[in-house]
Image 1 (cartoon, rainbow, N blue to C red):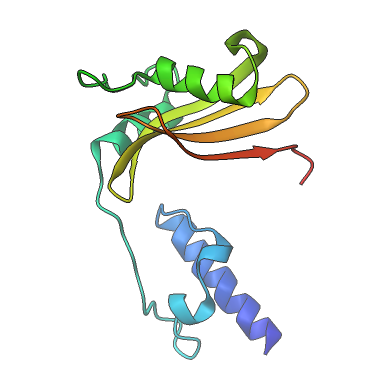
Image 2 (cartoon, rainbow, N blue to C red):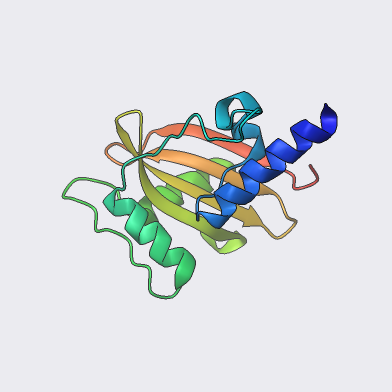
Length: 145
């Protein structure tokens, strides 16, 4: 039974990777993905493509070419949002390396998803509201997990 389950999971993951869609194993169960008896896919989910996805995708393929979408009048820029996050963490911008700053929509709220790390390897993740600069969420990871 375990070999069958492993085979089904492996097959589903390989099919997914070959089809060009990345799926984390924790996001999908065997019951959600395939019929164990026939191997047929029984569930599929897809999110609509958004303009920010183009920028993020281009950034993955050609990091030097990705350009941030300009902020509308009255909205924070990437630099302003990053400054808020770095200051909240207690650092100067010169003391951190920004690894990600992406404008995103989550639950109807436009936000900047910002990640940066310090010289000692501590990683910080912030979600900053594009309109008013409110810190929506923050997390710190010591990198030893």
